[in-house]
Length: 490
Image (cartoon, rainbow, N blue to C red; front, side, top):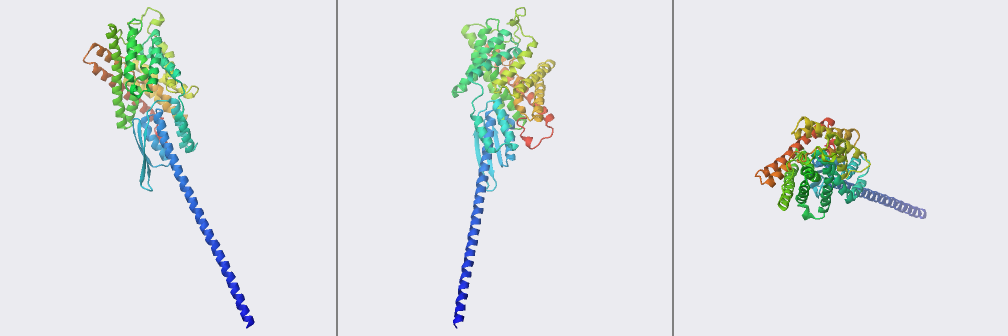
C-alpha cells in the first residue's frame, strides 16, 4: 500500500507539471498570435496612412500644377487635357472644368462613392521663364525622375519666386519693344523710333503701377491709349513725326493678340464656353482701345484747336521727306535684318525669357522665320492677312513642334514670340485708326469701323489657328496617350 500511494502521488505530480507546461505553451502561442495580429494590424495602419498620404501628395501636385500653368500663361486650350493626362499617369480618378481664370477639379473616391471638389481662381500673365521651369517639373514627375513631394516643394518655390527682371529693366524693355517695331511694322522713320521709346516706356510704367490699384486697372487701357494718342497727335503737329507710326508702336504691348489667339484655339479644340468668352472680351477690348485713341485725338483737336495731322496717312508719306536725311525717310526693307531680331529679342525678354538659355535663341530665330514667311506671303497675297498669318503660323508651328519632338523641348515656349509677331495689330493698314478718324470727324460709321477691326483680328487669328493645327498634325501624325496632354506642342 505504501508503494501504491507513493506511485499515485508521483503520477499526480507528473500530470500537474505536464498541465503547467501545456498551459505555458498555450499562453506563449496565444501571446505570439496576438503579437502577430498586432504587427499585422500596425502594418496595415501604416500602409493605409502612407497610401492616403501619397494620394494627398498627388492631389496636391495636380492642384499646384494647374495653378502654375494658369499663373504663368500656359495655353489654356489644352490645360484640361494636360491635367487629366497627368492624373492618369499618377493613377488618380478626377475630372475638371476650365473657364477663363477659373478651374474646378473634382477628385473621386470609388471605394466610398464620394468626391472632393477644389476651386482654383488665378489670373494669368505670360512668363516664359517660369512656364518652362513648370513644364520641366511636370515632365520629370510623369517620367519618374523626381518624386511628387519634391515637385510640390519646387512648384511652391517657383510660384513664390520674384520676377526675373526688375521694374526699371521692364520699363526699359518696353521702350525698346516700341522703338524696334516702329519701322518694320508701321513705316516709322528713325526719328519716329526715337520718339516711340519714351512712350513705350511710359506705357509699361503705367501698366506695372496699375496692378497695385484694382479700380484703375479696370480703365487702364482706355486712359493709357488716350494719353499716348494725345501725345502722339501733339508730336505729329510738327509734321516731322508720323502720328500713325508713333501711336501704333507705343500701344503695341497692350494689343489683344494673345487673347484672340487663345480664344480661337479654345474654340478649335471644342472649348466653346471659354473660347466664346475670350473672343467677346477681345472684341470689347479692341473697342476700348480704339475709343481711347479717339478720345486722345479729339482732346488734342479740342484743346489746341488744331486738326489731327496724319490720321489717315498709314504710309507716313506726309511726315517723311524723301529728299531729306536718312533719319527723315521711310526706312528701307533692309532695316528688317536689324529690327525684326531686335523686336523678337526684346519682346521675349519682356515676357520673362531667361538670358543665356537656348530657348531665347530659338525664340528669336523662330520669330524671324515666321516674319519672313508672313511678309513675302503678304506681298504675294495683298490685303489677305488671314492667308499670310496662316502660312506664317504654319512655319512657326512646324519648326517649334519639330524642336519639341526630337529635342524634348517646350514647343509652346519657343513659338509664342513668333506667333505674337504674326498677329496683326489692326493698326498698320488702317484698322483702329479708321475708327479714330471716323470718331473725331463725327462720322456715323465710326462704330462699324471699330467692329470691322475686331473682326479682322478674329479672321487673322483663325488663320493662325489653322496654320498651327496643320503643323501639329504633320509633326505628330500618331497621338499617344502620354502625348495627349499636348499642352506644349499646340
